Image 1: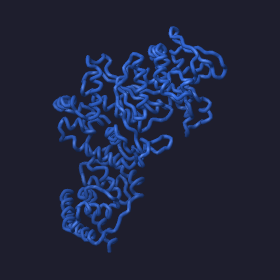
Image 2 (image 1 turned 30 degrees about the vertical axis):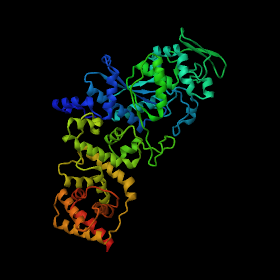
Image 3 (image 1 turned 60 degrees about the horizontal axis):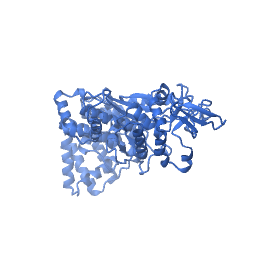
Image 4 (image 1 turned 90 degrees about the vertical axis):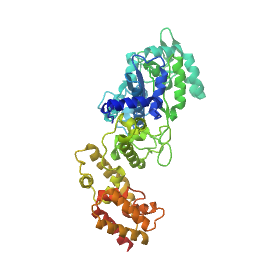
Length: 535
C-alpha cells in the first residue's frame, strides 16, 4: 500500500517536515510521545515498535488494523526524526499451551491428544508445517506480506529456547514476591490460591502446566512443583525454554527484554496494560508508549465476537474493496467504537476517493492531516476516473453487467482510462460487480413516479434528446433547473425521486455525472421505462 516519500520533491519534503512537529493528526500525536520518551537523544539501535499475535487462530481484520495503525505511527515518527532507525516486531505468542481445540480444524482427535502443549509442539493438522504454531505463523507472515507491511517476525518459542529472554526471566524470579503482589489482588480467591507467574513445561508430557510452585531458588535460577499426575517433585530452570510466563507477566517481560518503545492495545486490555506496566517497572524497565483503540461493533451495535461470528472478515472486505480503503477505515477515529459490517464498505471506498482527490491541491499541513498520507506514507497513486458509488449505480442499471461492458462505459466517459491494463481500475470494477451481486441487487426496488415527478422526467427526457452530447456539469445544471421549474422543495426531493425511480435506491451519485457515464441514450431508456409505470 505504501507509495513512500521518495516520490515527493525536496521542496515538498521540506514543507512536510516543517509542519510535522505540530500536526494534529493522531499518528503524529502518538509519534511525539516517543520523541518525548528520549529527551536526551535516541539509543543507537533506534526505536522499537511491537504488535502481538496469538497463533491459536488465523490472522483477522483486527490483526490488520493493529499492524496498519502501528505502521502509521512509525512512519509519522520517521518524518519527525529522520535518520533514527525504527523496527516493527510482529510477535507470536506461539509457546502458549493449546487450551482447547479450535473448531473447524481437521484431525480433531489428534489435536485433543495434544491439549496444553505449546502450539509449536502440537502437530500441524494440515500436514504442511512442523507444528500447528508454525502453520499459523506462516499464515501470519503471508498475511502481513500480502499488504506489504515492513516488519520483523519473532517467535515466543524461539526467544524462550534461544536464551534471549533468560536475563529478564531471572529478574522475574528475583522479584517474584513483588510481581505476585501486583497480580494476586486482580484474581478471584480460587485462582489466587494456585497462581504462579511461571508455567513449567512438564519434562514427562511436554505440557504447559498451571500448577502452584512449592519452591524457588533465585541463586540457582530454578523453580519446583509437584507433578499433578505422579506427585513427583520436579525442579526446573526458568531459563532455556523450560518454563514460560503467564501472559500478563510475559507481556511485561517481553517489553523489558526486547526494549519495546511503542505498542497499542484494544480497550478490552486496559487493565492488562496497567498491570503489565507496573510489572515492567518492577523489572527495571519502562513500559512502552501507546494508546487504547476502541473495539468494533456489528451492524446492530453489539460487540464483535469471533465465537458468535458476527464480524466482517478481511476476505469479505477484500472481495468488495481495496486494502487502501480498509486501511483508511482503520485510520479514522481509532478511539471511537465503529460499526464494522459490509454496509460500511462503499462509504469507506468513496471516502478514500475523496481524500485522494483532494491531495494535489492541499498545503503541507493539510496533506499531513489527510488520511491517504498515512495510508500510503506519501502521495496516493493515480485515481480511477469514477467513484465506487457511481460505479455501483452504473452496474445496477446496466442489466447483465460484466467487466467488459462496464469497461466500455468507462472508456466512453473517460477515453484515457484502461479498464483492462490498469490493475487498480480492473479490481475496482470486479469489486463493484461483486458488491452489487451480493448486497445491492437483492434490495433494489424501483418505484413509479407521481404526476409531478413524471412531468419533470418527461422534460428531462426531451432535453436529453435535444442535447445528447453535453458534459456532466451541463447535464447536472439542467437537472437542477428542471427541479426548480417543477416546484420541488426542498430541491433534494427531486434528486431523491430520481434515485428511487431510476436506480431503485434511496441515495445515489451526482446525476449529471451518472448520465454522462451511462450515456444519454441509455438514460432516456431508463426514463422511458419509468414513464410507462406512471401511465
